Length: 430
Image (cartoon, rainbow, N blue to C red; front, side, top):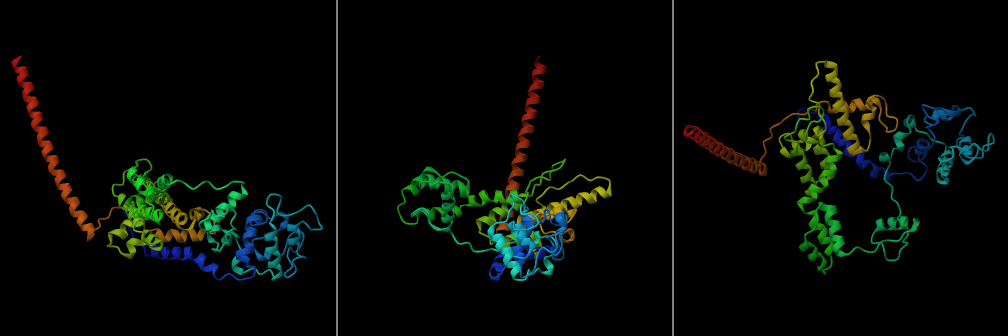
């Protein structure tokens, strides 16, 4: 399944886990004032740098570095601690004397009053711009890098309808669209919906009747627990994860050779979901399971993630072509890791620093270097416990199959000889 190991992958796994948890940690340390990276730079990234950034500088103005912010054809655009006197505020509010109609950004991209107030407060605080914030504003504005914030639920708008805070958000949107909540589903409809959603299968008539007639408190909760405990739960939801990680049971490309042992990874994902494996372990095992415990068959099966994508088995005579093919596979792997765990299209930086995600060309090839030891291949894994029992059972079934095949071949040979003998006898009688 996997050939080649690298402890760098273990480092990547740890970094990914840390990045995924960083958002909640950052939310606890936000300052009460306006923070440039958190509050201001995202505004510039979304509304300004397309026309005033590294590629375009309309009016001679750039808003992606502090040094560039000082200039422009109209002079300084900000005066620290003087928001009303700053040309930037005058432009976004339409109060600039040079051209009262020249409100920036253009129509359709105008700043909200809240965003304008954020810029005012930032300038009043001194327009602080950290040195490490220069460059692409996307580095702090990308959605997946934003800290988590606690949002206050809307007030109830439908009497006695909501059961939790999520219902309050739903009700607020329904009210805004002039809609009213649907009536509560019947028990018969409820068990069908829940069953299809959690295990992908319809409930049996007996299960429907049992739920409809269960008048005890907590009937719905017990139904949820029963369906979550079903082995079909993992089978139902593993398919979504396998789609995300580009899982296939053949290599693809021209020959599309089958992968006879790819099912080990598929089954591992199913069991991980059914066993409620913690997400941090779920990530580490897939990225570096063979490094964490190289003799553990479960760990090794998890690293099937790394080689689940297409693999070109065509071997051109040109060494340059072979190297290019290898780089294509690395790009696929790096892209899958980035999109699956971070929501970042890291592979776009293979040819140039990313235009949108905060990934540089150097960072892309650093990432490639960490996974460069990965290559598809076969590996024999000796397991113990239940795995040993399964291996023994498979060996016994294989023996029975071979014995049956031998008996079948003997019967076929005997029948063939009898048919030939009968045919020869018939010809002789003529």
